[in-house]
Image (cartoon, rainbow, N blue to C red; front, side, top):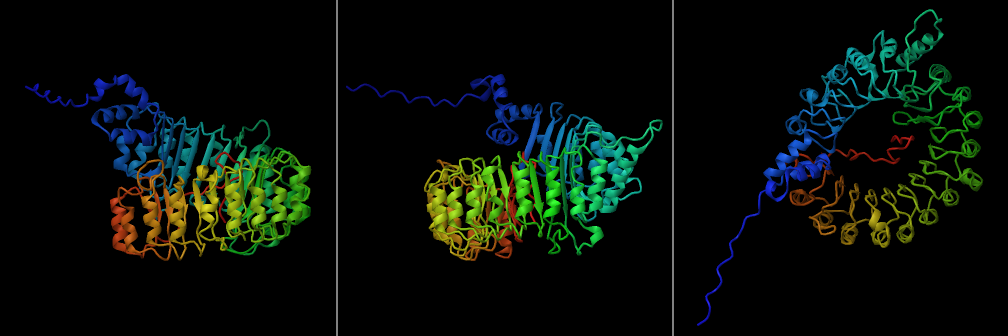
Length: 614
């Protein structure tokens, strides 16, 4: 007689979180996570939700720039917390009701992006509440129609935040026009070392600089207000960069080490409202500058610094041997002689940017081997006379990390071949150059650890360039790829890209007429390292791709593209389906009118030379 069968095993449910792990252990683990990871942990179970809520109350920094939360979603994540010292947020979906969440008395650093729906009351509240604030950066404050940013708001901020060391207000300062504008800055923090202003009218700026100079001329027995005793960095956008402005800045702020000026004329400057050789001679009279940036944007008018030639650059370089970073844009009459003087005079030069250098040729790098060869960041945009020979000489700088060669239309495959062996090159922009698939083969077989590559408008490239590029070690490091405006790239090319399982974070392929739904399906189905579908992509730009139909929008629903935060698509494709997608994925930022997605950083964030898009 056979033995009876064994009894069925009793199915035991997993023990509760507080039994499986002591609360102190869970709290210690969660305390080491960032905000995004805490939110994901809180969604797992009730026990983790309780622990995550407790961890949020003691978090020293709250950084969440990937998504823009509403006030209702943000408020539970920001409980009372006296340990909170740093906050960085995307405020695109916040309004004045959230000001109480943002102005915390314990804060030392506050960085807010896309503040267009928040009024100037934020400045007033920060001045009243954040007495220990050291770093403040606000972007597009109060730009929505109907919102007000008053002079009194700025006054309250400067009076209240007496510990400020860095202040960045990327907004139009004409809203602060007031007879006392120049003198209100006497109440600014004595420790302020960095000041960045989005745009300031020339009259207001000169009023401020005059007040600073007058305070220095007061006799000893008159107690004069002290303006900017510690200021070292000044970044401004103005109407015109003029000799008078340069002279006023040099006289008022002799301790500057970093000067960044940009203008965007709407009319052709006259001789009295322009920069000349005499103005350049007034720069850096005390030899303290480490960084100089003088940029003339062509946003409104095709113009340049026509009254500056090689002599002006030579006079500036003669007194600026300590410069480490130089950015010059719109110096159309400066030739190789002037640019070469900068490279050879500044032995510590690490960062060089020249845009619209219409007379810059290969000769500027002819004997670069005689310099210190310490360039790490180089941008030579719109230098159309530059050829492969010049880039081959430039590649002697083996520490090159960032290289921007956009719209240098005479560059070809041999230039890329020279760059492919640079051991530290991470960011390379080749938009509009004359390269072919062979250039991508050089990069694929090379040794440079590229993380970002832009090939926009390289019309000779075909589908074959993708497997050639990703055949080697580049596949492991590449995170950002731009293959927009390349007519020969089709769905087959994107399928080849998907088959390589390259862990891309950003992919731009806008205005490609032969890319359609099959490309979207291939990307949606792509798995990286066993993850979910389309797991690595955070940004995808498909604007004006000729083959995209309403069917493609279905592939952006869950569970596909779970990490996607930015999507560029043609809004007229099917408005109903696009709107439905926006409702189903509220944290997905959709751009339907052709605007560029994300914030492309062409210089690293620690760099002194900030690349502004023309």
